[in-house]
Length: 102
Image (cartoon, rainbow, N blue to C red; front, side):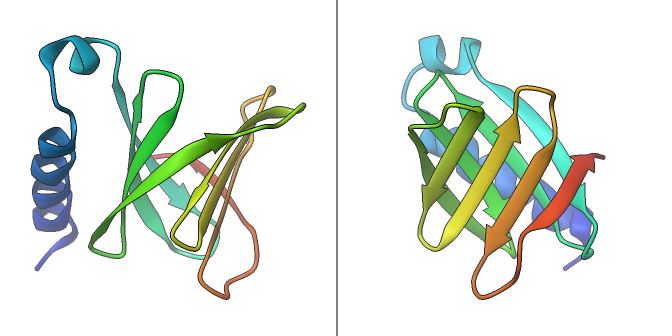
């Protein structure tokens, strides 16, 4: 399956995770590409969750307390977004990697 096919399947899964049209009105899709070659799609719903399509799997991240920006984690995946807009991802036993919008 190509990256485009994975992205389309991920979008369908992520839309299924959003229960109401009111929640989807406040959501935003973002595509990221990381320095280590990882690519993922993030759907930020409201202010408390982020749904990721990472390595062909849907991962739900909950927002955690952070003084320096936004931090989401869950299922062995952590996503940090600084106030300056710098994005870092950690998943599995991989080290932190910097990511940019694709």
